[in-house]
Image (cartoon, rainbow, N blue to C red; front, side):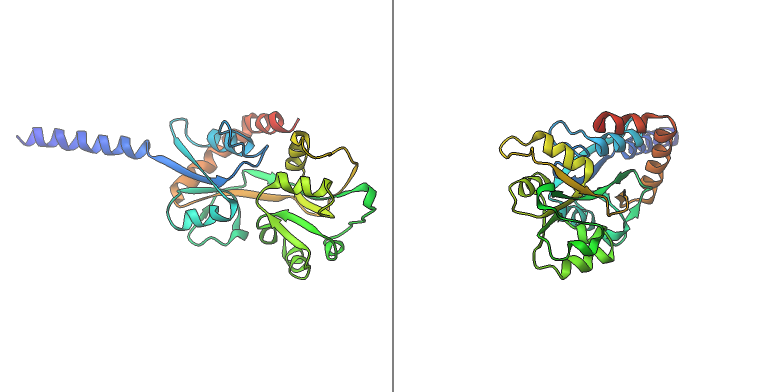
Length: 242
């Protein structure tokens, strides 16, 4: 009888271990942000990198949210991990991974306007449209400029940012260079043929995945290191930015 009970206990324990290993990871991420996050098809640079860094048998549920709600989702427990964030997001009890993606933000203006942008201070009196939470990620000088500029705004739709630039409803847009190029190539209802000036006034911004679990973060970091050393990471980047 004891052997039967012991056998049942082992089977139950094995079942629990299997369920734990196959547990679904709910990944909170912003709405489509090509080429990094492409909601249609559940793909993009970030999505492929994260899938590649996690164990092959990992089950991932992508939870798309407006960018402002991504951070909240981790805090309230509706997701197990979120991206793209870093320590500047100020999320309590989050375990940040190693950097899995780097954004290069730029300031884009129409060449015909003759706008000279050599520093963040030069943006102070212009009509600026930036991505959501840009003031958190682009440093104290940028945040101070935005606070003192009554013509500063942030929008969740970066496609609309590009449209606002070319329809002359904004003097400068602030966004990642690859995101800018992607949306410019896709827009059909606004003339985007005008020449632009791209000012590289921002340092590259490294983003991470924020996890609830230390173990999950450590597992991800180990997989990310392997992905980079194997050359697969570079291949993913090239696939979307060539």
